[in-house]
Image 1 (cartoon, one colour):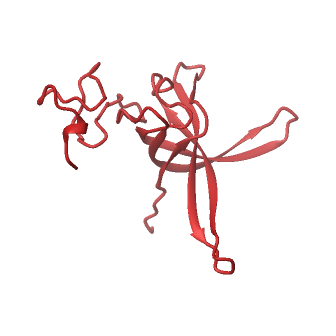
Image 2 (tube, helix red, strand yellow):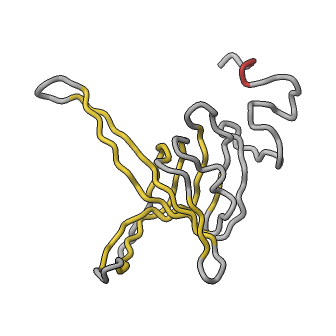
Length: 160
């Protein structure tokens, strides 16, 4: 049998605040939308054009992420595409395709910047990380560029 791959990687902005609900069995499911844009130069007019694609994302078993995933924030999402069907209120069968996230990393956003929070689906615990350092942050540690190993030095002090 031939090998197949179903992998999606998105970097974009949240289109709305994340909503967390619970299944009847008590499993958390968080849903949000991510906007990705592309730019190109029109060959006939020479004008720059832009198109935005909206993707619905589902993250399982992470009940505490809703407070971090707010409209306008920039996120990295890695997961797989999944299509499912449901019956609408009139009994018509509808289909939807969404990204089932396996990893979500908060990169930043409008005004506030990012804390580099990382959330992994599939029942794994959230693992907060610094966006650039890759080393886990201590719970409750400030994410404003402070480092426990160099007290008093902020990201603004680094020349690059």
